[in-house]
Image 1 (cartoon, rainbow, N blue to C red):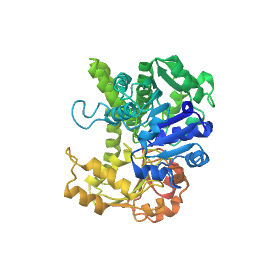
Image 2 (tube, rainbow, N blue to C red):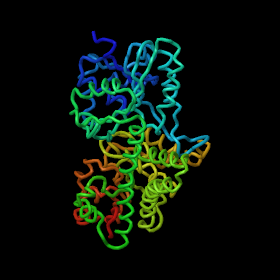
Image 3 (cartoon, rainbow, N blue to C red):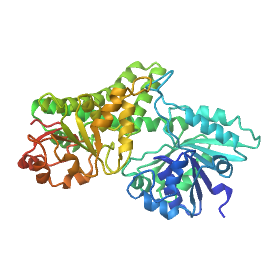
Image 4 (cartoon, rainbow, N blue to C red):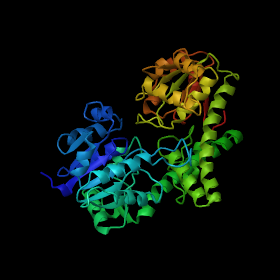
Length: 469
């Protein structure tokens, strides 16, 4: 049996904790890895053939290690007690109430985890921040851990932020650009580094102080989102001047000082990280009196919101200034391809705008089901108190349908809106789709995914991001 020194516990079985622990268990078969979560249905899904997260390659990794040295359980206290390394991998959403509402990170779940660890620890443990946290959060975690009920308990706190991209998380875990470990105790840092070192080259394992590690995660996401908002800002200028945003992106991407990544113009970025982390960064800057810095980063969010609103407005104006009672096929609802994650998806906002114009939406996404679509729309369309009006509830119930194919969504539609870049959309029989639609048949490509010339040859009136028509 593995020794206590080689037992890992991860609190949180979400998009980060589940895949990360599955990879550690796969690569280190001698280390016992336990993933704990109080959500019984989520744990049941991890123990089933239908995982709660869709990620290419994840199921194979889980199935290789599950039952051998990878376990999913709701028994938090016992799992913490028998482990020497405890990862905190819980949600840190943007606060919706109180001081910092709309910007600051809600650290409620992180603090609860720290208190659980303090209450259920005996001997020495390494506590690892895996959640994305504001800089200096480790200070609060350490203070809470000092309140441990067992006098024999002691702790080292490390920061080990994740740098996973949904849709490629398994590849990112297997061959990471870097593994970042921040801390004050060199022995604790080396302990964690040795685990990752089983499959990651030493030069890719970066070691910093705690505060640099915590801030690096926020900064990385802010820089990536900034690039997306930058090229999206240029896309508006391209449409006004006749330039082609893809050609512009290619031209500047060949500059070695800039590089080609994250220069794909679209309807806007989404996901659980970019907006949340930038808002957190803005709040931190304001807290420290850096108002100009805060305003600079906030503009990244302003531009992203503008891009989504601009796309919705373009649909309405193009379709003779009304979409009322018109069927619009929505292709894609997840925030990006190869994931079932819809958090902050641009599709939710576009659908909200179109519903407010009384459009009838027929939605297809290969990984997102009707209950998720409705939950997202209800949340977005609720008032500040979180209450959904009867008007909006009826609008969602009567004007939103989720179907099982892109072709079915487009059948009898006045327009198609491509909102997620699923590869299967490129292989649709557009000739047949065109014949089944109302005329003129509009197609709004919010991801610049499709061949515009081919679509035009079929008869579509095509509108895409950053290209004049």
